[in-house]
Image (cartoon, rainbow, N blue to C red; front, side):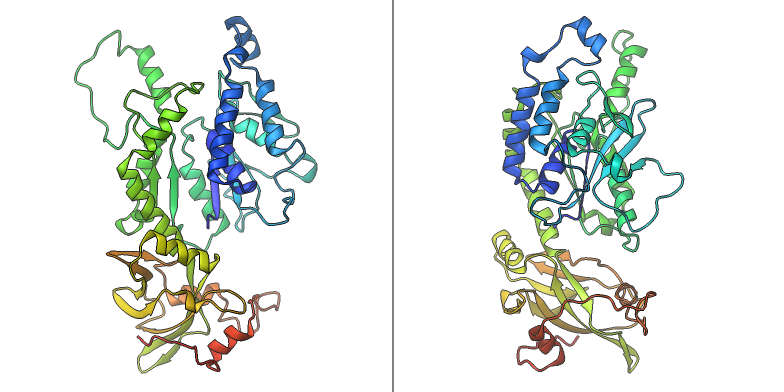
Length: 446
């Protein structure tokens, strides 16, 4: 359901665990807490002189041993998973040590070339220099002062991925999404997870009083450096550039810490922070909205043929499908809201309800035939799933039928440029529905 995950520092560790190693969230949380308590043990803290000479406050050996044990000491970013089931697309950030420029380690290749003057580097070495997963985890977690830099053979030295205002890698994630899917104008759903903030959602204010001791150049520089790690600032900048129609697809989960942010090595506060998150009523409401959007965008529209022009209008024949296990998606939507769920074209009720009856008993894929008209193939429309008073767009909408025609290659009379037809899953039961041989064929004529 999540196509791309980008993480920095602790977020990078969780991204690798959840989406490359397919651990559930509860296991990720327990692992992270155990790792923090093991690495930040007071017995592993060095004295001042030794810390200065070794470039770290804590013994890095304990961290590396723990990462090797969890991620395996020999698995590389592009290795085949043990289960032979493809993992999700994951990018983990790290920074080079001279100017703090961001780099990403990824387990995928993109469809479009990167720009020559990109704001970040993308490391894709040959097979001999391919980094190990634990090395990538070690690099993104190399917080200055706490741990030394990570020297990856054949690539260079790296430090924490949150440096230079990339503690929230929202801009890197949006750029990578465009690199992976160059023909998609924007993500269906974007979710940003924070680790706590001092600023919250309030707008910046100007100080009217200056104290030479509190507001001298040293504390000002310190506060400026500290604020560069605040992911909430990056979020507000990006969110402010979005149009009203797109803002409903972007979610940010963060929490304002009442008494200030705890130290990075403070392991005693983790249980308290967890309780604080769970007791936040605003977070629960946003969580339900984000889940509903993710589930709704599991459904997508597919044209069965080119739109046909008739009597001044374009007739579009296609079907609504589901890219995730449909039975599970429908069950989750029912748990989220028991109200009837109906498909809409803009503000027009298509008269179609979401039901497990439209799951093919043979191939177990969701298949709901659909027919509607548009005034022009370049007219922007939106197919959505509505329940309660809220509408949730299907994947790739709003869009035009011209865009779907181009993406599906329906105008290619002789196949693709290499003379092949685009692959299409076949099922004789579904094909019977499409051709009208089955009595179960249901169309909504709008």
